[in-house]
Length: 355
Image (tube, rainbow, N blue to C red; front, side, top):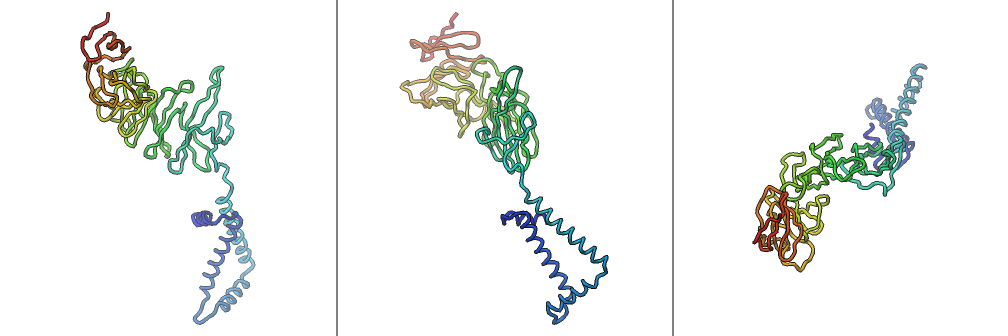
């Protein structure tokens, strides 16, 4: 019955009273038709059937008539009640949340920082304001909302970034006062919400199959470990390093800000080709135009290459220490490797340790 009423509601835009009357008339028609069918005799007509039915109805005893009337009233009340329940105004047809004072508020468009649909749910971030000591802190929190319900807060702390992958929401759960790093969680519409890994991360990127990220508390400096770009499956398994952090006067970018697109990690003015486990010789392409013939950079080795990523030349080989270029001056590259400082000419000759 309820499904039948809902189907009518979806087709006809009428009030709940009108809907109830229409349904009641339809039901009465069906009942009368069924009753008349019981009285039908061979070659009889509708008028004869109706007269016979009416006489039987008049001849009912008093208590039977009372029961029949009461039953009819209850049936009508039931129909009207169901229609009112189906068509009653929905108090939360728009996104509604509880603020910190347990007041229902309706965020306007500018308050909702990001909004994504997952099935019948809407996930969104909304700027919350709290007093932390003597300071007023504003931070984005992650919510889940279904029409007709109050929105449910998902992130325990701040949520500076979330993505939707395969009907799940992957998000960063940060402290209220520092959203530059946090814990990686996955939430699903069915209510599951769990932490993906123990270590804290800086921001992350996703594609259909993987999560790309940098550890928050990684090895200091650039090179083999420090703030390298890592990849893992959506469930947190199979973590590998796909690109080392680079140091170069020509390459501008940060592990805070990286996007993944078509097999490339894209930074501010360059991109790095990513695939399987990194070896330090991933192709690096400068996105800005330049008159320079070569760019010089470090991964887990000191390298020069053409701005389009071709003709890579290793100037100083693989080392377990981190590399960092300090400057390029007078045909010399001044750089650090671990705690030691060196200089080498731009062709990879005459390497000298600087005391």
